[in-house]
Image 1 (tube, rainbow, N blue to C red):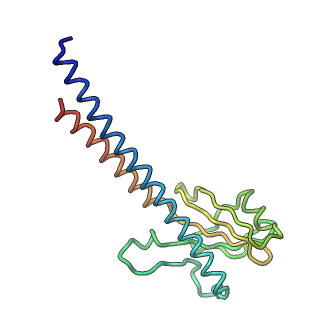
Image 2 (image 1 turned 60 degrees about the vertical axis):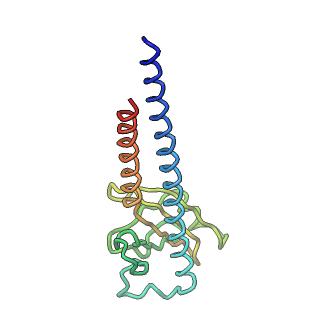
Image 3 (image 1 turned 30 degrees about the horizontal axis):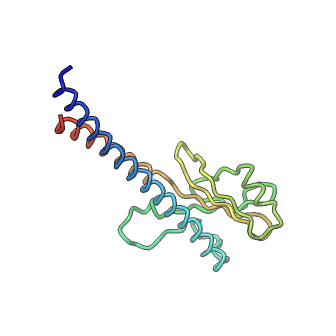
Length: 172
């Protein structure tokens, strides 16, 4: 292999590696920011509920929607469910009951009024982020879909792969 071919190959690999490093960094920081935003929205929903606990009247749809800022409604939707200390569902969202896992049961049965757990779960083959907080005699669960954030991250991944291919071809 000639020096020219070795140099071209080295520079091509260097350009592809630099593009990959930027893409991975972008992906990770975006993933972290989206996770933080979702967690903040769940914590905000819990805070709003604690400030206005009379939300549960009969004609309420058990969904909290964010401000009309142009984002899709499903991105703002937070599902709410109330569970008893034994895990039985007292109030469920119109879309159906949310899963109650062992950590959620611990929060519902806890005597600590600040007990809470945050975790990912699957509901109807879709990923959700769920926050369960102690509330009176039981707990309140808040869930938000991760679909939009997963789609955005997938888009970043595809863009990074395309950029790597273009950079490799151009540098070669």
